[in-house]
Amino acid sequence: MTKLLIDKTAIITGASRGIGRGIALAFAKNGCNVAFTYRNSSEEAQKLEKELTGFNVKSKAYRSDASSLRDSNKLLENVLKDFNSIDILINNAGITKDNLLMRMSEEDFDHVINNNLKSVFNMSSAIQRTFLKQRKGSIINIGSIVGLKGNPGQSNYAASKAGVIGFTKSLALELGSRNIRVNVIAPGFIETEMTEVLPENIIENWKNNIPLKRIGKSEDVANACIFLASELSDYITGQVIQVDGGMLT
Image (cartoon, rainbow, N blue to C red):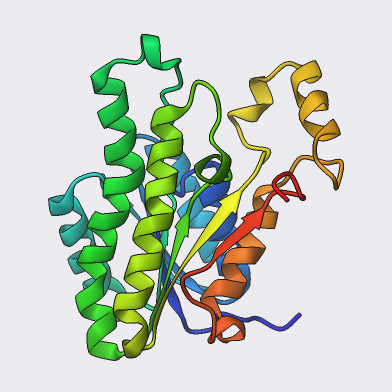
């Protein structure tokens, strides 16, 4: 198999588990050095770091909070020192605090916006100087189809992911002339640790509403990330790629 990301270095936020972990593994398998962040899952992060280095690439885990601009700037400084260069940024870190609006607290709204949307601003702001200087780079923001269609009980999450799309399209226009590409991947219903606890009837109901009749895997999202991170997508920027099995058509 041809490795598409040999000698490249990527930063992936929130990669100790779930979709982020799947992306990190897929990138390492494709020859990419991986710097990734975690906030609380120290044991899982160390395990992943060891697993990634098994693919003969460089990997390092960093405890960092993407919702903090200070943390983001410090992270970039440390990664540049440890890896010497950065080619790809994947803004994957995010949370949910679901509730109907009538029961949603201001704190829960702000918490989701800060972790899902402001984090994208923080990391993109922190890395842009490096990308501008080298006149190349790929920023991939993990959105959601909820940011395109909405979902009851997720007004905060939907707002954050819709904001990521608007931010991405604007940044793509700003940075395109410097050969810096910015795109969104919008996953649908993806199998992760969070979905494992859902009742079987709920999962079956989701499957029935997906044209491809299966739940997505983290590898499905990772493969789209590999495409957007590699030279195969050199003429693609400002786009939203749905990885949803046809849910939103």
